[in-house]
Length: 112
Length: 114
Image (cartoon, rainbow over all chains, first blue to last red; front, top):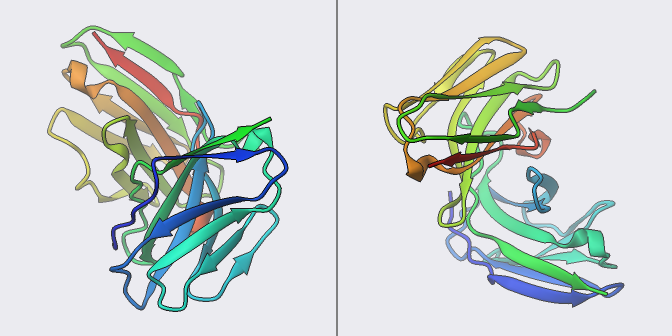
């Protein structure tokens, strides 16, 4: 699985969009970008994933650059409940080893 | 559904003691995963099962760790003997199929080995 690089921490004002970057310059053609988050004292929670097209669901949007070497997770209207550690993971979808390797992620703090 | 259930939620033990962590996956899920999380190393996959059979245990740190899944509704992770460096939060997750996005995590067990 490709290595990812994320900023250690970020702040965002409540109600504003939170843009969380992730670099994955060694991503290969069949690897997807996944985002998970972990709220304090809880288990990780899946957010979204994509291959090369931008994706949107009820939680967030995922913007992947054309060369696929980086991506941005967008929380359009951050709330205090979005304060969490956000993990960007790059891996092949549905391989025989169905596992997740998390790094240290980005600690997002939403400020009132 | 109650989601993935883990017990105990907190465990404090002394070095050398045996520790057993328990997990009940979501009913009908074919995959079960054990993860360990620390500040230094983040979240690491230890082992995962498919239909109660261990598939990949390459993440298990050493022989002191063992995991079993005697049936589809129960799994254990055992540490014997425990050491202070085993202190971490241990998560269990289950998945209906191979899709990564369908992994559901339990609340975790916070283990402290003194």
